[in-house]
Image 1: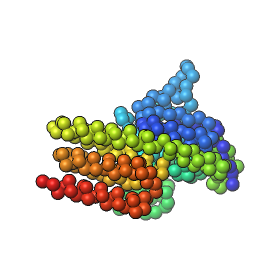
Image 2: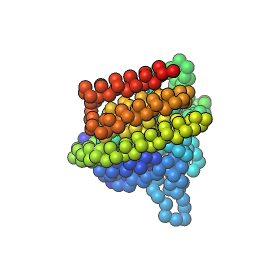
Image 3: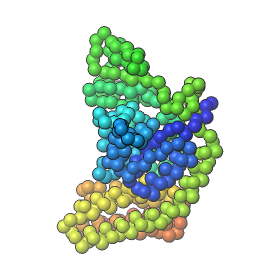
Image 4: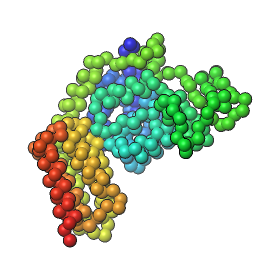
Length: 353
């Protein structure tokens, strides 16, 4: 089995949460990725990617892999992915794209897949899950498909029948197949469908060109990455407390401004999304559970009266208790009691006339 060396690789990491961005960057460097470029949102990433094509001055290297958060402003991960796959300025329309998000609901995954995503990495993540995604991108590149409505990796990981509402080409005899710039096999009757079966340049770059089998990175690197992630968890409490403080402040402002609460609940929903995504990564899966509950409770269409604000406060109180008492794991009896207490508080607020 080949042992990969990522020293010649460039990874573009796009994440709006500075704390999480630093953690993931450190993990990538622990895996000995030679060059990690970071951007705080999709807009910064697009500017960096355009710079990689700039002529006449020193330009940043084009990334071999892009890892991007989904929910960001002003340009989110979906828009960044679309730009990479479709824009003439894109430095590499075939670049592997890993979407990183706490919003791992099926509708988000499907939408990202239909824009040309390569892999989806759900938050909370672990060092091992990042390691695994990197290896999947290197070892199992899918052919790219170009049609009038789609450009990206083959969305079928296995050869199965297409869904009844999805039309697919049945025979490769109708498809233009590209193996390289020199080798293009065209059908007798072109129908506007192209398969790109290009050489695995990324595997060659990391030293796996002599093996057709999957490879690995040195196991010691994975152990070091897990240790670094555990040390990063020591800073999580401070970060989470800041987010909880922001939630309380938003509740206070919302109570004083009953006519403009939608924007405050939108901000609350975004903060809940961050807490949902990070808790389990840093040893507090109950924060992920409670963050998910708050996220679901503050979507558009939720109640935004005073009771709705108090329901948000009840979630904040529960999360503060988790951090204060250092309730790790699922919390056992303490965790179940906290969840039951929160549910009772929600029911009480909902039943108060």
